[in-house]
View 1 (tube, rainbow over the protein chains, first blue to last red):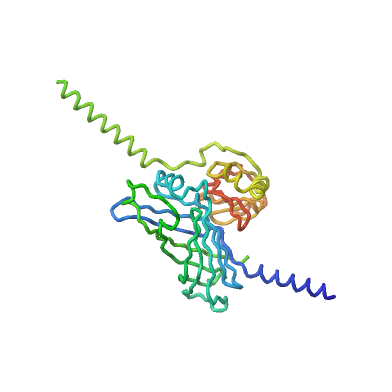
View 2 (cartoon, rainbow over the protein chains, first blue to last red):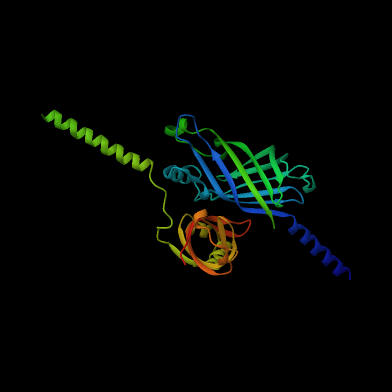
Length: 183
Length: 130
């Protein structure tokens, strides 16, 4: 009997966990490292997987580096081969925990909350402390997560050749927008 | 006379170099739908390969054009999934109509990597072959 209770408890816990997941496979991540009056250095990834656990406010996003598309094909090639080295480091991750998260607090008006997290790119991890994230619970029961942050090129062990160093910003603006559906 | 000739040749050379340079810097993106597939596999066998040895599979398949056969398990506006194993991103103009759900199809696309959160392989710029 005890075993049965334990088992049913376990099952209900599992059930509860699976009920708390919101995810997308088509999240958008943009970055820009442009310098004024030079050609824009900008890319977009529209196939990011992002998961939010509404039970504890934990989120994780997995960005496949080869999925970043540039307007300029040669720039895309150089980004993959020389800077991101995406053959060796095909994945970038962005994850964190939203402080004092409670799904009951969410509604259709955008709420700004705080999270602590990490960004991993090119094999290097950088912490993102007390950053803000915008959260909305939409009418169709999807959750929108969006925000932006700055990342220093030097934090990720990326070397920029001298010839292009004045055409490339040392800080990269990253923005993301995920519309998550309950799973 | 010779000076004039040299000037013309130099000018021509500059024009040709500028043209080649421009074409190099502003070259076209790969056209995945016209490239020949490097591999032809089923969605399930591709997932097995990636979950058994992610690194070796990444080396083998990343950035390659792959032809994949599988049963459609999910359809959205700009993507669909084969056998819950291979996620295929498409342009809106190439979207798969909803009546293809649970049909077996063959597609071609570029492998962008392995999503280990969902244990799915991701492809972009997909086109439906069959």
